[in-house]
Amino acid sequence: MKKLVSISIAVAVLAIVSVNQAQATVIQPIAATAQNVEGGNNQAYQPQYTIDGSEMSPGGFTGAWPIDQSSGALVTLSSTAYNGEPWTLPAWSGDYSKGFDWVTDSVSVSTPKWIAWDLGATYNIGSFHLWNGNQQGANRMVTSAEMYLVSSLPAYAALLPSGTLVWSGSVAAATQSPTYTGADYSLSSPTSGRYFLMNVTGGSGGATSFASISEIRFVAAVPEPSTLMLLAVGGLSLISVASRTRK
Ligand SMILES: [Ca+2]
Image (tube, rainbow, N blue to C red):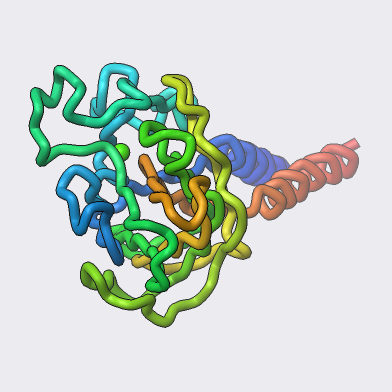
């Protein structure tokens, strides 16, 4: 009986530890492409600026971002120079080859406005965290979009590829302040895949303006806490039964 009690305690402790460690894994995509880029593929508005930590602070991208290593939570992300074009920043010294965000061509054109990301490996994705355009002005944000699971990273200017719709909805506006932290968006259900594509369906400037995205990260689905809790409860019940039997 003593052995059973020890095993039960071990199971319960393990389960409780697992619950505490079930933190989300944040995935930084390794590559991005887009259907179009403002200004006929302007190099300052390229899709890769949604995955490189550009426009993020404090102190710029340090490598530890966006996860707070002690708490496992997304840290506060913000613009180091919101509401300013990249070349107005001293850090960029007029280097037009560097930017902070992806900017679509006019949303009025009939071709789809998509941006796609390669996560580098297959993950079971539960949600994504998106920072809407935070520096291009109130009329340059995404207001609605769809997210698709696709089989590969499409080439620049390709038409909307076939894929599985995994999310669609409104996209919250950026605050255009240095404390802007973006927002979480949960997929309809956890989706295993490597390539995800966002089709922009609406912009804050209406049909004649552009829309922009500052940054994105994908978040892996975590094991159902209920399953782990059941394990823990099961273990504790065994302990309870065992101690009662001993009396
Ligand atoms: Ca960026």
